[in-house]
Amino acid sequence: MGAQIYTSRTLSDTVNPKWNFNCQFNIRDLYQDVLCITIFERDQFSPDDFLGRTEVPVATIKKELENKGPATRRLLLHEVPTGEVWVRLDLQLFQNRASK
Image (cartoon, rainbow, N blue to C red; front, side, top):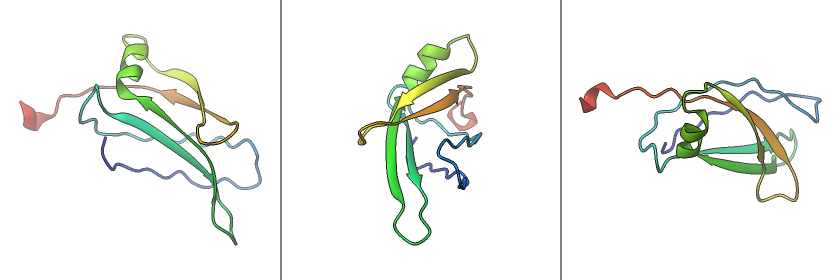
C-alpha cells in the first residue's frame, strides 16, 4: 500500500471517540500489503500523545471477508500497555486497467 496516508478529523472532549471515517487504498500486492492504523491524542500546547498502533495484513482481510461482506473487528493496540480500536473492514478488488 506504500505511503498512502489518511488522517481523520480530531474529536474533542471524549475519551471514547467514534470517528466513522472512511478511506480507500490502492493495493499493490494483495499478499504483502499491510493496513497500519496509528492513533494519537492531539494536544494543543504540547506534542501529541501516541496511543498505539495496529496492523492487519490485507491477505488476512481478504480471507476473513471472502464472500461475506464487511466485518467489524476489535484490534489490539501495540507499543502501549493497553488499548484497542474497533474497525469495520471491507475489501473490494478491482483490476488495474493499465495491467490488462
